[in-house]
Amino acid sequence: MDLQAHVPRLSDELAPARAIARTRRFDRCRVRGPGADHRHLQAGVLEGRCQATGTFEGRAVAGPAYVERSGVECIDTLDDFFSAVGKEVQKSVKAALPLEPTHLELRDIIASEELAHYMDGVDPASMAATLIAPIREMVDRGGKSWRSYAALACCDVVGGDSRKFAQWLAMPELLHVGSLIIDDVQDRSTLRRGGPTCHVIHGEPIAINAGTAAYFLMQHSLQSDELTAENKLRIYDLYFAAMRAGHAGQAIDLGGMAPLMPAVVETGDCSVLEARILACHRLKTAAPAGCLARMGSVAGGGTDEQTAAIGEFFEAVGLAFQIMDDVLNLRGFKGNLKNRGEDIANGTVTLPIAIAMGRLPKDKRDWLWRTLETKPTDEPTIAAAVELVQTCGAIDACAQRAKDLVEAGWRKAEPLLDPSLSRVMLRAFGWYVLERHY
Image 1: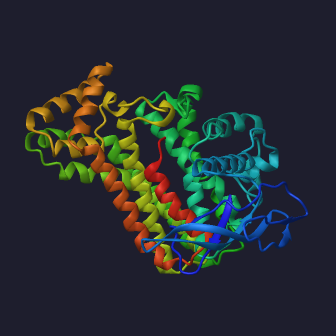
Image 2 (image 1 turned 180 degrees about the vertical axis):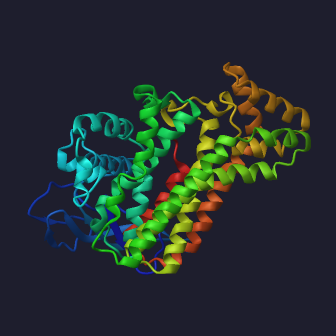
Image 3 (image 1 turned 90 degrees about the horizontal axis):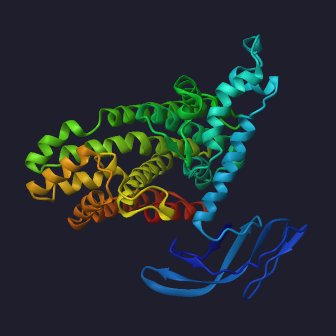
């Protein structure tokens, strides 16, 4: 739902009342709300007064507020919102990578009008089967899609118009899916997004090629007449900065944390281990998210100061996202999306494990590391390991660190952004990452 409450000097803590009647799309619409100051508007745009309640500087406040809504779809929660974003992202990918491309569609995917001769001898059906289908197999299962949201939301929050860059929706998703396909080959994973991994279905050679191609297939979407030559170059630089960082983070992940563990177990000093895990998270997730956010800000005409602060906020959100992923793995995911303690069963050294190593006595550190090395499959052993990490406070410490990161990032960004729905949504997104359960 596109909902905005304007109340002078009130902070984003304001919670607007539900003041808009659910309505079908008409040629002209009218707001219905308490003390209604009704206005007739174009289809799908509603305005009027509502009663609002909330807090301002710690004081309870209540009174009339201005409310605006664009569109008529009813979305009540952030889960619903990101589900809707995911569907739009999937539509964008389907349009960009059709499973049965025409000759011209395929030309634009792998070449261009100027390089049309590259298509000589290319069979669209064969190319679709070996290049497009493996990527679509993963995309069509759905994902969180928050990376796509980041790019466009950051265009709007600096006063730009993200509708001019709607073609960008598919780009972050393909960048992410490409990395997942390659990761799964490297990790020998067999499940992804509720189904077999790409290499299980199509074989490793096709998966590696398709996953790598996904990084580049949306390059043409970065072209826009709305951008100056200087900003096009900035956006290209940011895109490739995201790719470089992601691959560096994967290099850390592939190297693993095991070489650091003997010294950590012996001394209880987990500082180097914590820093290494955070570096992995920062490079694999936070840096690409920050680069995508900066791209959106540049496209929206943001100042250098705004672009830097927005990028740092999304880096904080991306790092918090991965920390909370480590936390949820031990606390349990909503709907049992993953088995509780799966990281323990895989022998993965995550941030909660690292922090626990700095809090536990040596005999407990020894036991926990030996347990991880054996990659236990029995529930009692996994539960005992989770309990050990929980009781020493490591899981709660991780959750608090994630919160501190998001709050610090927002404190820096907020003063640079004018009050708007986009700013409210960015603020809410930070909370959403901290409170998610999947």
